[in-house]
Length: 362
Ligand SMILES: [Zn+2]
Image 1 (cartoon, rainbow, N blue to C red):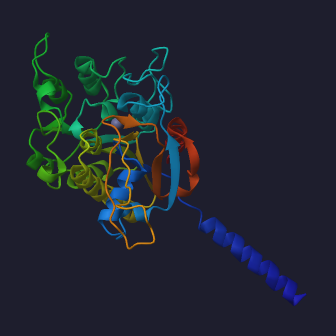
Image 2 (image 1 turned 180 degrees about the vertical axis):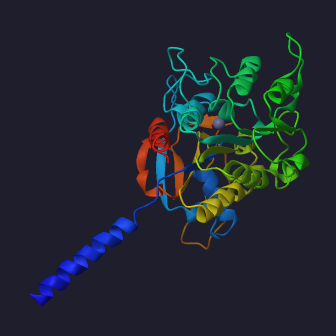
Image 3 (image 1 turned 30 degrees about the vertical axis):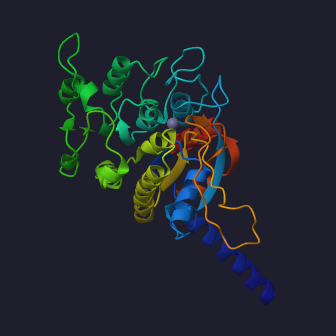
């Protein structure tokens, strides 16, 4: 009898521990997108680092996503960005609209409805396809005027990237988009060094005329801008936030079939991923999702010689196209809720799962 009592007590204790160990609710989501970052681009970094653990190795969970668009097995960044932001397929070149031309609801809007703050940090111009997929609704990604108009209207709390020239152009109706942001109460930074001095939201930092320089020339911009964004979005915030960070120029390096530059861009993006994971360590309730919109360059890493009985003959980086490829791309998950997303899925399913998580965020 005594033994039975002890067993019951042990069960009760175990149940109690299960209650108290329950994972906290997700309140912050950091969505990092390596533009053009397929499995080979991550492998390129691993090989170059001689398998020293990188931020990717810290992942608590992984998944894979397919990337095709509504009208092409090889997606462009506009359709893939739309899939990742709204959970819906669209045609290549289209941003934030479905195939019938109806506006889609991006994760930034779902987050705002929850009272969460929102931010975008990129190394391209801010009206480029991936960031624009989080606020714009246009049938062609080249419609710069409409995209920058939607950027002003989006009320996204924090925008860090390039695009200063397009935002400074005088509009037919007079004034510039930067004037429009200022009129809405945004603090404005037009040089990279000013980002660190920013305090308070909303904020626009357009710190290069077009894209920022390549990783080898832009220093610590991306990891520092990511840390600054996390600081500003989390300060005195009891409603959480949604932040998208893009390693925009992995794609540009791979379009140019430039492996050394692709490696620089991967190293830079990895440091931003590490900053996000460090934040999640410090602030439970933070989910970090690292993925790609598609693979660029058809990168492969073949061995120097194909006789594997010989000592290693080195690994080359070879590209098979100047465009994108149809291969699946990885998803790395870290922090609160990382266990909830796994398996092989479509890019739209990943976004739908994030929509559901954000809609329930506390
Ligand atoms: Zn892309």
